[in-house]
Amino acid sequence: MQQPARSLFQGSGRPGPVPAGGLLPVQHLRGVLEGAVAQGRARSAERILILTHRGPDPDALGACEGLRHLIQEGFGLQATVATLGRIRRAENLALVRALELDLEDYEGIDTRKFAGVALVDTQPEFGHTVLPEGLPVLAVFDHHVPPVVEGCEPIGVAHRDVRLNLGATASMIYEYLRDAEVPLDSRTASALFCGVRYDTADLSRTNSDLDEEAYYETFRYADRTAIAEIHHPPLPRSYYVELSNALSLARQHGPLVLALLGEIENPETVAEMADFLLRMKGVSWVVVGGAFEGEYVLSLRTDYAFGKAYPLMERVLAGEGSFGGHGHIAGGHLILEDSGESTIKEVERMLRANALAVIATPPEGDEETIPTEGRLLSE
Ligand SMILES: [Mn+2]
Image (cartoon, rainbow, N blue to C red; front, side, top):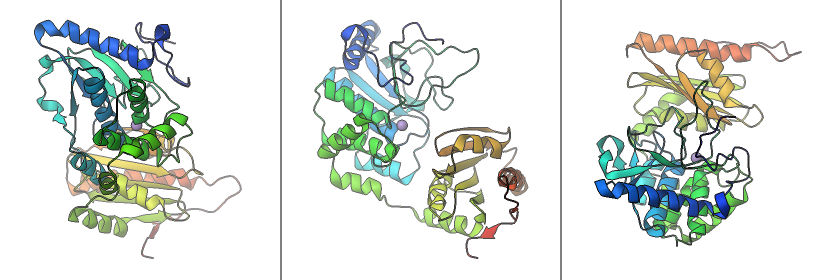
């Protein structure tokens, strides 16, 4: 197995990081960041830049905020959180607003001010993660399976903490704060709580003791009004327009609900509708798609009995576009040749045919065939 020379914690599958030389992870991290800041001082590059994946979710935002708190209050260093891609999902917007998170736009940052990058809820090797040129990646905190790129070694990161057994990156950051004995203020506690809450579905999708501890401990200090507002955020009128559109276009084909929506106003619609439609009794998987700004975006959900989302998305896209996913959730997108209605229709015909091909092969002994026209939800 290839490992970057300086990585200490590439602990794939291990219960947690292996501290080097008896140091706690947080002590090791402190040494790495202090060293980089000391080196950067001569050219006034003393801040740490905290980044995450494009279109950050609550776990990414919570972990960013927690890490900022650790670096500033625990280590006495300065940190900036910058995000890439507009935050559109109502819950995530409410999180940023209710907690008054200070996020800079990645496109506008002056990289000369920074000694290096700390990356949370993702790894440098993931496609949805952009890093500024010329800045070293000092630390990585994540809980996703590292991507395997043939012939490509992972880049050297002084502090790489990847724990596959954790439900949320926010739980890991909570542990660092706990070990550094940094008190949680209500903003940090609320942000971390939301991260653990949404990535583990209120602890229903994890069996990690650390997730559980992080959930309860951060909840104790969280702003209850803010987290309630984040849980039930105000929704724009366009949300109801898209909901109505999705309900009228969705078709059920046996265990599958397909909703291919044509042009959409908000790319988050596809994930929101997929979550909503999967709750229908008798439905095991859902594919929702729509065209947005030159791309066709797709969201796929499966229930626990049906299995993994990733191979299903692979079959739905059949070699076109790009996609990713873990467990019962997958997302994908295709670049559209143009935004004309006929191009969108053509893509939707192809996706529908691919999805129906998955269910057209009946399980052994079951000769029932699935009608391709499907059934409207109003029928
Ligand atoms: Mn996460």
